[in-house]
Length: 421
Image 1 (cartoon, rainbow, N blue to C red):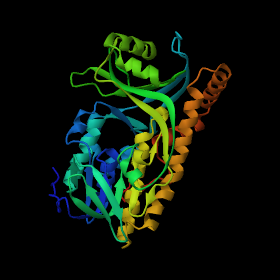
Image 2 (cartoon, rainbow, N blue to C red):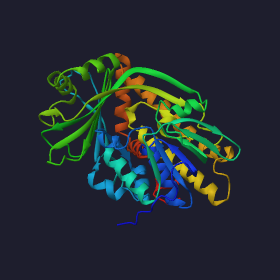
Image 3 (cartoon, one colour):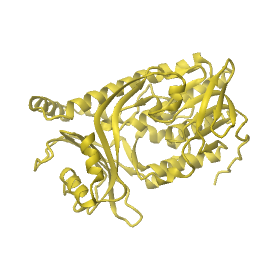
Image 4 (tube, helix red, strand yellow):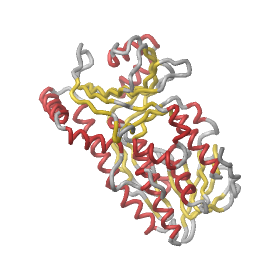
């Protein structure tokens, strides 16, 4: 068992980097920086109460590149036993009431022999592994305290916390979600529009095993994704669903009793896996596109959903955040090795240039896909089904899409290629 380092500093002292947000992106950024450069003093502050992350019943799709990053950071060995590999994916396009849903597109599940293009992981497992590694590295996590305000100066940023403590750092990273308060404090504007849709998220128990297959059904109200999970502690078969509906319908469906909810669920899920039941809480999340107009300001950087919030149609929101974490950590670590000021604007602009195009491209792609598939316009339906069928017959095109979904490409940060910074 690795030796756990005691934090070298107490809250209220000076750090090199202060990260606001103890979600996956904030924790991954902190771990990546300290694992590569132990001399960096990094702390994480989070407004959420301590231990609230343990109550998160959701699950996330972790692309192959992010799995490589987590392995390089020393977290994957704690996650893998509880992670479900996605071995196959199918795509259909139909109406909710259609008795048969023809499969237009299929994907094999490996980007390399023995390496699936993605895994499904319970959020609390992912968060717990990152927190364990952060503790091993001696990273302070200050919970239940919000950032009240901050002020950037020539050599450091001064951050005032809600409990009256003031912290100085060379760099402040905002990883506090799509409604980032720190982004607003920094005066960074966003491009935003609401889709009029909400995503219903819940875990479904089913009679027969899923075989590691993920499904995405394009329905008129929006995509309905079925994502395989590891069996529960009793060996019960489980899947996670991300179910897009018009917001008014989603609110109604979530508020219904279990019988009505499961009837609606069965109409979309089908009976291919036998009898199904909702296994856990259900909640609807409003969906929209949010892109920050800038990713950095003096001694300040955005990462994760604070920089971009996209539609879940491609399952890339969390993976975009991990790309931010890997890129920001690499830029900061390399700057520190060269004796540069890690919070200087010219250093931070390297991170922005690296991440901005990828983020905008993914935001536009998910926006177009959602508009293309979340409708029941006959001629458009015919054209998109022809397009899906053509891709199915083009192995190189399918391989390209798998590569994009996995996040593995030559220009990716080192951690996402499975290399140390």
